Length: 151
Image (tube, rainbow, N blue to C red; front, top):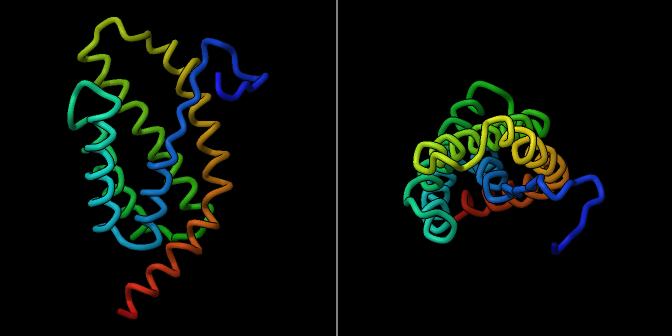
């Protein structure tokens, strides 16, 4: 193990979805088009690197950026709402990937095992990351948006 957490057992898996968080922040603070394009590109790279099936993350990242941008048109984009939508997007991504993988590989893991050993630790990690990262990325994306507007 690279980092040992005393509260994480050997069976539990922490999956940092920092890229998904940043894409949702981009969708909230810049615009839908940029977030979807980056989601599509980075999803393809993610698929080529980590999965045996192209398109799982490519369409997952881009689709969740699209859904998040539609939610941001209805809701205000304050930090609390952005964190809530980002965590919801990570939840949907985890269930989407688990569903696709369980269709392809029948013996991957049980649903209860997925929820207890992977989903809950992953969501807790990503909530902590979203709380830490939302304000710095908000400032960065707002300055980038201003720069893009000035050009």
